[in-house]
Length: 271
Image (cartoon, rainbow, N blue to C red):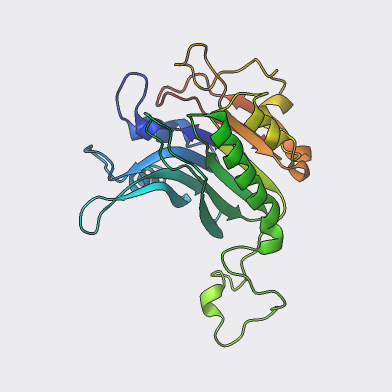
């Protein structure tokens, strides 16, 4: 099973070209794709609904979109930027959780979010954390860690404890195959965390038992770059595995050749 996370910066590469086909070609081999900074109706371009266009470019994938920022863009039109998850297997349920943020004097601070997707016996959390300050990232990390920890007990968007068979009015709460939605224990947390290994927000995630896939692959904290345009270059994009998934780890890497964004994708292979 191949997974990839990629902050696509709305498809704009370091050559300043917006090219969603380049993004799709970079991630097409994956079974599960987590993207950040996907726009819908945000600016004038050939494909203003980038989520729909990416879905066209990646046929055969189920997909969901979760907006972090959602603004009026005209009658019947929303201007959005957020996270997208695509999966070859069905996405059984999804939720998008706004992460806490507050104004910073003299700075533009947009709302970040984490999007949850249940795919078979796996929970996937696609997160984008604040870029302005470690205090906001720590607050966001605490919120998302609490949600991930509580989800198996709280259940998904529809719960029916004790119900083992369909009643006459249950069709609206079940999946197409007749099962009630589940909330499995194993979880993957991945995305653009805007923090390097060893930083306070990163350490708070590791302290909850999550393993860093790139560390499992042999990278030291000071090695690896996913945000090359910064001076010095930084490793900001991560894939974290809950303890139950660590035995399934096979390989992880940074795609150094990708040119479709200011970030580099991170790949994970699970048994």
